[in-house]
Length: 155
Image (tube, rainbow, N blue to C red):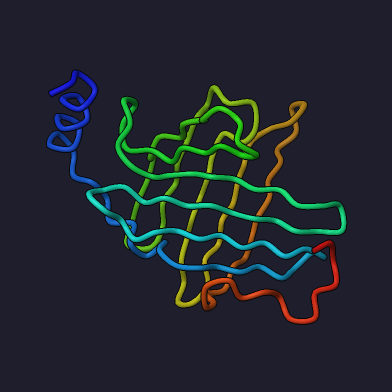
């Protein structure tokens, strides 16, 4: 067994993996003059894989991410636009809420997911130029690859 695999196995045994199955699904936000979809796999051996696509009049952007065991602990790992990974370690979790933090990141320093029925809220928080800043997405559960009705932005 490789050292990395052994380390991951020890981490998994040392701390129980939180159940984030409530994040799984296809989620759609049709607000703010844009169409944002986020898709999360169900957890497999403690790993969930996600991707997001944002389409607006300004163009299209994407992010790939995953949630699972990392050398830093159980974490959300984001790669917006295919950038190098940024790790946010789980700071808090509950039956339908997870907060991930990375105080060393410029922005954001916190990533928060919360589910209420068919609604999933994703929020990022931090500071820019000494000012508290945040962004929030309010998703609704939708069938896979659903598009926003009547949306006329860039395609």
